[in-house]
Image (cartoon, rainbow, N blue to C red):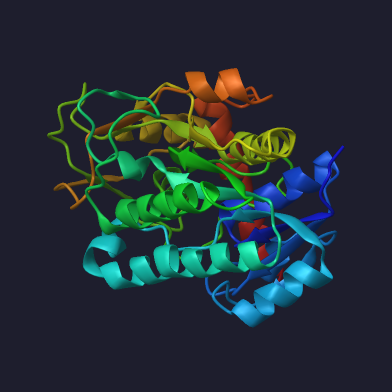
Length: 335
């Protein structure tokens, strides 16, 4: 199946990374994980994966892992992801997302890694002129989070031009939901992702949900986003790795979304219906750095990878997110 011995997943104890580990294992890859556990959870890592606690900027540690685990590819998820925090603490984001990625890329080159998949973001596009965003849309980030990710994309492009490394930058739109089998999901305290926050509110763990901005140029005035199920996204990473192995002299930059947007109020209404309750909405002003709408043109990923969405339905996403919230509460009460 694969010409590589094993895959290293950075940030594999986090939300998206832990799902990618499961998807890689199901595909038959041998998987190692490095995670500092600052925001990740040891229990989120599948037991079949080899786990290393540490920082990706620890070049000696990474070098040992690449050698001992015979790593041929890296899936890079480690980093900071909260847009408003990036505005108030930009150096944290340029440190965690850019400087540490540079260190990891250098370690990959020294360790002979041939394939690199990068967890990028639609935030690299900033506030595009149209509502549907293709990969060729100009990348003009409006916050340090998006800029920190774009800088890593640029590093990968420049490195791949002169070294035997190919890469795929997957630009996520809004990731939501949880593993359909409730093996893992988002567990970060104080999470800011809308469906996660709404799920906590629906189960009584938050007093309500803040709606940031009601005067955007959208149908109901609230921000519109393209929500992709985390399991579909994890499968896209595996498909991207398969493609890189089959095309060692080529690299990719792909949007990860469904091509359909939902407003904040539409999402909250769906959570109400699935949970059978009514979430309190607190209408507040816009947050700095939030564009009105971000919707993926996903034609390129559909045409390039052996991948098709399987869970591209808002009700399904919300149902899995709520099931995970109940499972997380059960685990917490048992511990």
